[in-house]
Image (tube, rainbow, N blue to C red; front, side, top):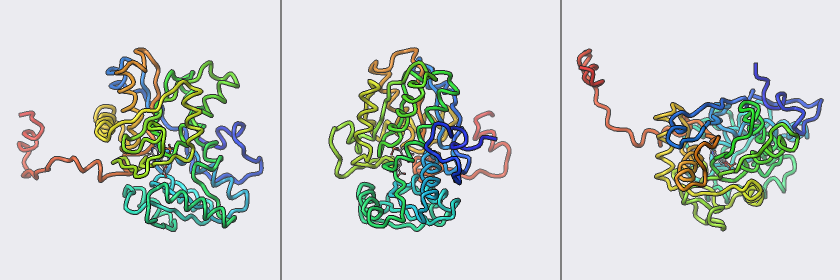
Length: 350
Ligand SMILES: Cc1ncc(COP(=O)(O)O)c(/C=C/C(=O)C(=O)O)c1O
């Protein structure tokens, strides 16, 4: 079976031969064709379905590396600030490693599925009177002061190393790098990691080209688009409700070196893409995860993406993480009598 990321890409990762590897067999996720998106954009569109990782998001790629590194450096606890998925993943990998995990989450702004994961994996859950950016500042200060705690946010280079493997998998499966790679951008670790992966494969001659990176933010939380931090970030896509990305400079470098672009998508456009991916491609992702697709549709419309392009959109988290948003638009469901005729009527087949 798939051996997990570190075994699959050991020669491309900073891992000691004698290391105890902490893995939940993450990675090896589907790169699935998206026929409806391909049709409406006249491109060859694929989805990299990262919601099918062990804890339901791409964070597992970074966490196997960060927690394995922490354990092999003798750390006894990990800490992260999180909008939810990082904390879910840190909790799972820490418990797997038998070490303590504490998570700092912004008051009241976390999707239920993610909180359930951190609870069930036994993380110490600390709600902070502030937003994600305040949580990250607190996490940096706490880990700077207490050396036995490893900070496992994506400022930790091990996270970037683990997450770059998604680019390797895409080239390994596609046989080439895509022309464009679209993905959501919050704290900007993932766009940084993808660019690192694509450029390493290109440097080593595994791929003959690199993609243009299309990083998409929520309009109410788009510091990289605005060119300045956003004090009070607001978006229904709580995973990317971040006003001051920790990997700002690396994300800008990825955009510039790849001749890429940052775009903002309104919550309305995010939700449209969210519904389209589930309702037409059969892939259920959480709202933030649809940002790359929303950006692709806009970039195709204004010609930044040409017809005939090969495009990969990373959909970063499983839709099950955020049932509240999924059910918020649900029409009234009327109960029917135990009568086959009523079923036929409901299906409009009679
Ligand atoms: C579903 C989903 N999609 C996209 C992003 C943005 O990735 P980055 O640009 O690398 O931050 C996140 C990020 C979540 C956290 O930052 C956290 O969990 O603390 C996410 O959960």
